[in-house]
Image (cartoon, rainbow, N blue to C red; front, side, top):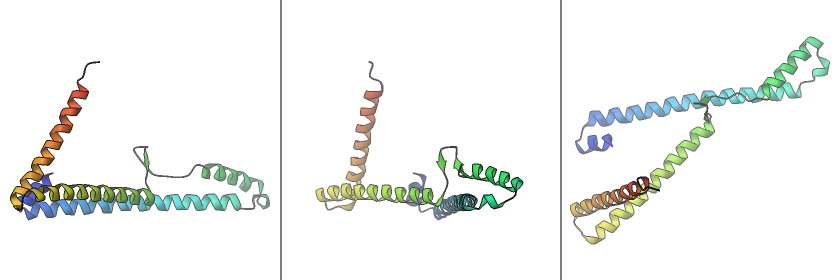
Length: 154
């Protein structure tokens, strides 16, 4: 929400700082996901090679070592965030896609509220006021309903 205040105050330094940090965050996240994807790909390559290798042509010592490699390669290598989410390019694109979908749906909803408020009056200032008043009323209604449900004694 602070970015909107910076935008309204025409604070270009704050806006540039905000977008620079956002871009840096996306680049760091992409780099981590890319490195994790390389690790996953190399682990799968080791698994495929060790499983298709002609182990019976190897010496006994090397065959025993290969068995350990096969056992270890059956558990795929991965980098996780807080032991919950596996980092890879798939998760990076999934997060980006879901963020885009949420942004589009919010934008569509806000546009519908703006146009319905604009239909009541042709004045842009009154339209913006009605739009913000509508949002505030909706939030107050949701918050009051949540409070009623949360503090209801059973």
